Length: 93
Image 1 (cartoon, helix red, strand yellow):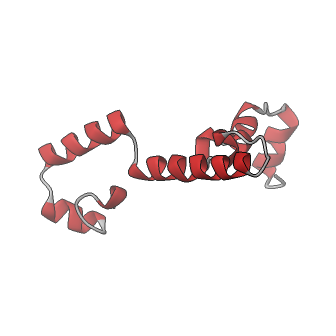
Image 2 (cartoon, helix red, strand yellow; image 1 turned 90 degrees about the vertical axis):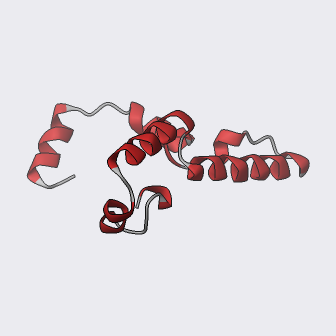
């Protein structure tokens, strides 16, 4: 389920958790983020420190996964042309 909150499946979560409790969990996750994000950032920080200790010049964001990674940022900023849209609709993307 959502980060292990309530159970392993939606059915388990519905059985074990009340609606008000689910709302509190959603508010918490919205405010503090996913525990996975914190783990990824910690490992990225460790990797950057090791890289820098061995003479590299990496930043923490070089090792980040997901939306904060440089690759994801470049992808999201890429603008699609009209031809790209037509190819996508035609199944040639």
